[in-house]
Length: 516
Ligand SMILES: *[C@@H]1O[C@H](CO)[C@@H](O)[C@H](O)[C@H]1NC(C)=O
Ligand SMILES: *[C@@H]1O[C@H](CO)[C@@H](O)[C@H](O)[C@H]1NC(C)=O
Ligand SMILES: *[C@@H]1O[C@H](CO)[C@@H](O)[C@H](O)[C@H]1NC(C)=O
Ligand SMILES: *[C@@H]1O[C@H](CO)[C@@H](O)[C@H](O)[C@H]1NC(C)=O
Ligand SMILES: *[C@@H]1O[C@H](CO)[C@@H](O)[C@H](O)[C@H]1NC(C)=O
Image (cartoon, rainbow, N blue to C red):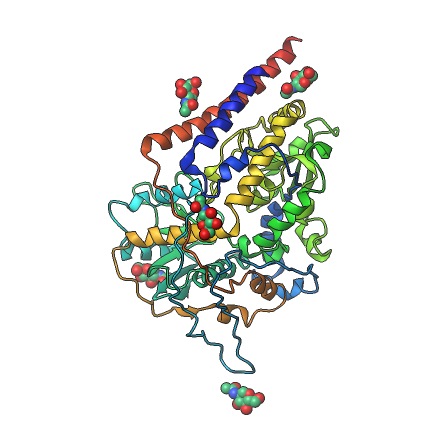
């Protein structure tokens, strides 16, 4: 126990002294406060993938019309969708044409407001933007490199003089592409005239795109990547809502989870590890950890049936009501899972089955600080059992880990920073372009009006709820400088040391048990 306290002291000391890693708002200092809020989390999202496949089979087009989900009622929303309220009030309302007139994009929205320079430093995970773009630092990105990525891209995006154009190549699963484009349009509304001209390819699939070993990485944007594929990671569609699973936009849902966390104090939560999701997307071995008796592996695992959920108004899958356990399991499916942020926001200690894929914010997190690492191998069940037992023996530390992750999600992954991340990754990317972007012949201009005015039901609702109504009165946060190679190496080594530390504790504990 003494040894453990030393290690934790070091971890938290180390994190709070990593001064370049905090946001300007002092987030890291805040992250280490003693517990003051307790939250339950939700896991249900994993089911998504299952639903996708089921949905793909049920609806021949592969798209689920939003109308099948209409009739679901939503609580009244009273928050602004963006907290960057400008001091100079200038609103960009949605201007839908009436009757049978063709919807066009308004021409008078852009603005040359003088904005205040932000005094905030972006969270440290923004540094990975440089790592993701490293492959092209020397060569730059040529038109050919971009075009080559059209083999797998769902769409090509062009931003030219502040206007957005899209050339669609193939439909994505469900509404992923639509809500990704919607998010980019809102970014343009938040920072009008600030985004540089650029041209990029975007792939909306789960799995990284294969490539031959002697090819460089494709200049392709995706929601996740792994150390071999090295695409450029970008926030996924669920930040603006996931209509097919009734998962609300992040702004709104995060508030609900934070509120929900206050309902059950950590110590009063169920002292087991909770997971709810779809095991049929590469997670079947997790189900083996259900065990035959209730506490064989200290887990409570539930299979989510998205079809049933969809018919029943998504009562079981409400993410804001899933922070009921002290421990929550995160496990990826075919690729990263959007469930990650909802799980980490719960104030519960996350048992993080070490992932192969990363999304844009995961790499900023540290074992034993933000989560408890669980090995991906066949000893998963024993590791889960040990983690729960450890947490129940060290409740203060377990609670602190839960707190740190939910503070990280609440403070550093709030929507303001999601937009700022998008801004910076696009901005840094555009600096590498070695050609002048042009509008390809097959592209159409896109704006909030052309997307939202024809939408209805839950899709329209999510779009209206997430629409940025006025430009930000300040510039994006300031991106911290890149990691120098030795600091980065040390950071990565530190993370693997901490993971190994946990394995050693488990090993020691099992040896003691054996000798008893
Ligand atoms: C639009 O609707 C009006 C009245 O319903 C009709 O007279 C007109 O021809 C329509 N225009 C187009 C372009 O369809
Ligand atoms: C940053 O600017 C805001 C608004 O102008 C101000 O309230 C805040 O104190 C400033 N923070 C720092 C660290 O200077
Ligand atoms: C992709 O790019 C190649 C080379 O520029 C071009 O020949 C091909 O037609 C493009 N494919 C699509 C679907 O646009
Ligand atoms: C938890 O505490 C019990 C009782 O002191 C002990 O037998 C067990 O080994 C501990 N387990 C862990 C993982 O710390
Ligand atoms: C990681 O562990 C090794 C071996 O115990 C140690 O030599 C090294 O200094 C550690 N690295 C960091 C960054 O803590």
